[in-house]
Amino acid sequence: MRIEDEGEQGMSGLLSVVGTGPGARDLVTPRARKVLEEADVIVGYRTYLDLVRDFFRADQEIVSSQMMQEIDRCRRALEIGDSGRRVALVCGGDPGIYAMAGLVFELAREMKSRCRIDIIPGIAALNSCAAILGAPLMHDFAAISLSDLMTPWEVIERRLEAAAAADFVVVLYNPKSKKRTTQIVRAREILLGHRSPETPVGIVTGATREHETVQLTTLAGMLDCDITMQSTVIIGNSTTYTWQEKMITPRGYRDKYGLA
Amino acid sequence: MRIEDEGEQGMSGLLSVVGTGPGARDLVTPRARKVLEEADVIVGYRTYLDLVRDFFRADQEIVSSQMMQEIDRCRRALEIGDSGRRVALVCGGDPGIYAMAGLVFELAREMKSRCRIDIIPGIAALNSCAAILGAPLMHDFAAISLSDLMTPWEVIERRLEAAAAADFVVVLYNPKSKKRTTQIVRAREILLGHRSPETPVGIVTGATREHETVQLTTLAGMLDCDITMQSTVIIGNSTTYTWQEKMITPRGYRDKYGLA
Image (cartoon, rainbow over the protein chains, first blue to last red):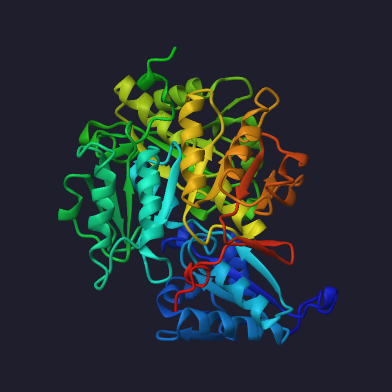
């Protein structure tokens, strides 16, 4: 099946990069669901596909991959789009935040792809984890990935230092994996250079999924918590406090600065 | 009508702070919709209520306000929750990002409120604007509000400086209003102290609504664009580029640094 506007502006198919949110079915937007239902082909990492599999039609072609690398998955999706079909590339969270939207455009440029590319936003880890923790992101915040696989560690450290010094709430993505265990130790050290050991820290693992765990701790205590690749870590700013097991960053700085 | 777990842990009603996303109906999550459908009372600013009004039941009490201040609205919602009812406080975007979740907790603490408070995440401006622009948030980013109504301008300037120097992609909330026109000029100046005038800048106004406008420009040209209180401004990092009217931040720094 070919899409209606085939040929318009010389483009052929349609690749939708679909954010399916953190995992809970009721956080998949109707737009994402509709795109999944209408696609000719669905491509994705098996774990994410399994979370939305009941939205699929029986006659859809599913390209599920356990081992295929991200790059191969995106290339494959683009090739299918270029062949004139409607393809949905499934992405947990929001494809626009540290996820596949960028890689798709990078590869499309390289491959001189001509299919239309639509990004369907989703509830990202930072949205869902903030909601679970209470209200930590009420003021300026910085999102920083601790993965140094494709970013030199010096760049990451410079950002941690800058965010810590300027009192941003800090959201850490990819805080730790089996192989990367020292980055979170160093990140905490940098934060402690500018903030009290009592600064609230929230750690959400597997947000909205069956195995979801929430840990509310402090900069002092955070290394004693379980942190995995499925965790998002939110470190408060100098005004963040906890109340009834919730983490709250007040929206104003007036009180702190004694302003009217 | 009183909710089932009334009295449990000494709590009475339930206040759900509901993120209804950027405006498009099909970006309202099923969870948000269900909470709206099941509430006894719905409280909100009229503009946001109008966007989701067809989810309401005929017998629901609607506390719609054009002029009532945010603080009064949150207090009212908490009072209704404390009276044992189910109340939904409607919030555009994501209540957890620069929005009402925090104020609700702050006031609940002050009022010694005993109702349960649930935050229902939504598609925030940064998620929807990034999707519309392409893939600008593929790497570390800082969200900064330029509103100095409750934050001293020195704090904001320090954050702009830190984010600019450490090469964060920068998302500006509340970039400009009729009364606040100089902040965006100064913000651009600070960014230009660290980034090329050719750095891509994306401006999305009224994302996903009928009057949505998208402007793709550069740090050099951004002040010639229309920027309002409904705009979100995303400024690329040193590696961000544009391709086919999309703004793309590559995910890795290896190329730039000549690493393998």
